[in-house]
Image (cartoon, rainbow, N blue to C red; front, top):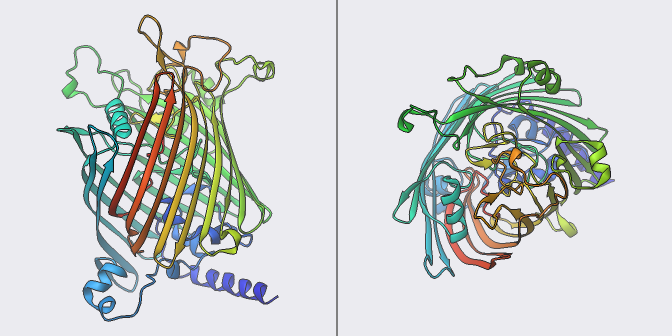
Length: 542
């Protein structure tokens, strides 16, 4: 009874405080969001959790935002000095008025890695940047950041970069004597109209889902320009998202100098409707379409896809277009305040008669996710567990060409493995005061494309940027076909949170990745030590 009374008092106070909270978007980083997730997934919480990044005013209705972001340090002489406060408790520069705030912080990552690779034992990351953010009034906020990096990666990441020509989740790379140079910039402005509408214009990333991965829309790929409208009324949250993606694969037309040719653009329009059902469940429906933009051929942003209340398939058919339309489902169920079950289903193409026949028709293209997350496991405070399973059939997300594929900047906008795989991934996080430990185990079976006896590369459905018109077999397609590769990835790290304002951490860890296929076993093992401002997700577990 006492516990229930305290719970009611807390949520009442949180609701009262939220009315005075200035709105801004929180970093999309998973470890950062673990501060709030036990609160926003509680049975008493009515927050919509599938669309990320979260906005502060919504989180503050359910969680003590200020105290969770406050430094847990001793009140000693050093921590009360200017250097101590800036290092441990505060932003580097802050201008604060009655109804405005401006913050400026350095961003950096310095990491050293020792690998078992005989030709490339020592690798590193050297990143510097800055982050400027702020609020004007209670409704307007902005954020912008810039990173400049030189890095030398472990061999399997190095190989992926040389293939895709981009750093995972980052920008195009320049070669620097065995290392890479690359820059990343992002920024957005946000405005809330009353309590129902939020408008965000920016260049960044979006994530749809409740799990570690997303098979609908994730932050796996590089930043992109977008405009987002979020409408929240009663138990419904409706999101309109308009994006501009880039294709790096299509060469310039004949007669045009490649140096005078900018990368081909393609657009994405997304509708996501999320409905809370009672205290425990929520269901979200996503409809998405990708279409190419080509000023040379008179193709550009199609105004037909701006309409926020429309089903794309009838529009696509009425236009006689060859655009790539998909539909997805996201759902969660709160088994208790600390155990949440979630799932996703993405439908690319579907023919019920072919599914029932079970004959592996190539165009039965679907993706499925099921997962479980648990907070304060065994009643141990700040011990959190997530485990999930992902399954993506061959040729899912592919289309007629890379210009309409479900990807951006040579990377999938869903899963880093693309398609034609199944995966199990589990993550354990524990935090005690400012100390933390994190562990991950990922196992996947992937069917990569491979060459035939004549040396020609065959499209077995893993590379989402290949044309599905090049599939070799009409029937008999199974997950893992092609070069079947079994991958095991493990990572264990310990660390210390220096400053929660910028999520500045010091970490020490070890990673092992093993890939077994017809061509043998490839193993990469490395230990790393680093200090960084940890505001974004990085997916090296592929």
